[in-house]
Image (cartoon, rainbow, N blue to C red; front, side):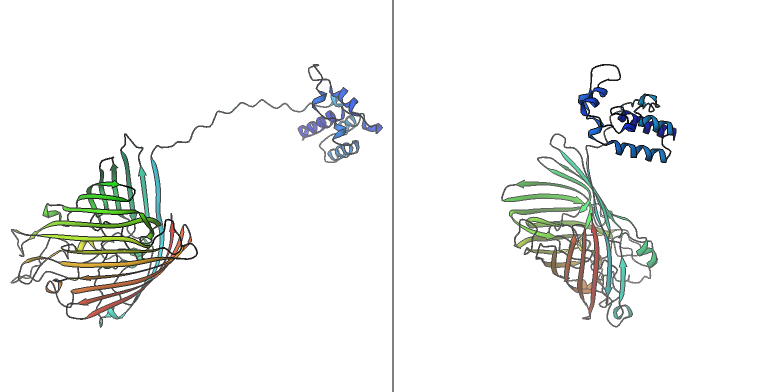
Length: 516
């Protein structure tokens, strides 16, 4: 408290030394104030001209009232008060000295990297209602439960966040014209342990890898190594817009480890990409990787608005792509104790496109875009999702032992005559997406797909194998903010069994997404 009193009194005394004593109520003019203020602390030249006289700032009545207030609050003593009234500043205590401050060191620069990094993904909460108990969130080519059975006549409701996604993109500094980048992307749709409960499946799901790859770009050729979209089908340039988790029935949708080489020939009118890849074989014991190749055309002046799945909406050039795949299978001979192998080949061709019907050079209302895909081949079921059509090997003749095919089901099957046969599939998918007024933040989409097999009916039990699959949907999306999106969808599934029975599933889907 003594420090406060000394400082307060000293400041007031300094002010009062520039005026006449307050006890006489005399008015001090500017000349007198300047004369008294002219003495500097070191006796040097006058500095009164630098400071206005106090009487020009406050009146003597205001100063007296201030002194009384300080005295009443105990901030100055009676002696300090009396001296201040008489203008006796030198008799007061000096204010405490303020120690000199040491200049602080300049702040250190933040730690940075020359690499660029981007975090992306989305948080997704889904509610699904099905008319049968056939599917989990991801339907793909799963067989629909037959009518007249318990799962075929009863429905289910599913709440899930498993399609939420987290990804990282990184880019190294360019080095002598070489650009290096990478991607790591994961979701929570991984395989659960055997006999996992519903609680475990949907409340603490398994983290899984979607993409893990590195890309090296030079002026002459681009190398991609790691797990990424298959070149077959030119994924994801022509993928549809759905609320549902992709891949849906009839959609080429697959990722795999691969080594890919490509080059884009760029012009103002047209970009032409040529690419070839060796990829993980569907059967590692075949000792031969898949071979894939394709050509892609991008028509740069013709641009449209496109959304793939529930991902970001972009303005992209029209696209047409053709691709093909060749593969080799070598499975054990059809015996309980095989000694030799049986071999055959698989192949596939695909044509994919994304074409603006009502073009747009920016995202806006009125844009209309077509997406389409056609694929035909044999031994290509793994390019789809959970697609085996219900096919199976016949029982071994004269043996109760089970045959181990040493390959995922649905690619190659022994027929009833014991001949190794690849399973044929042909599919097509078409879709439209239209962006509504006023800004295209509200839009609708609809898709239709169909799959047919020419030989599945002879590759399993007629009441378990389907020969045709049809699927359709209708979607409504609302982008409430650039980061928040809602979607609602109706889906219709139909499969025709080899014995003529038709199974149907109806699905409703509501999705809430936070995109980052």
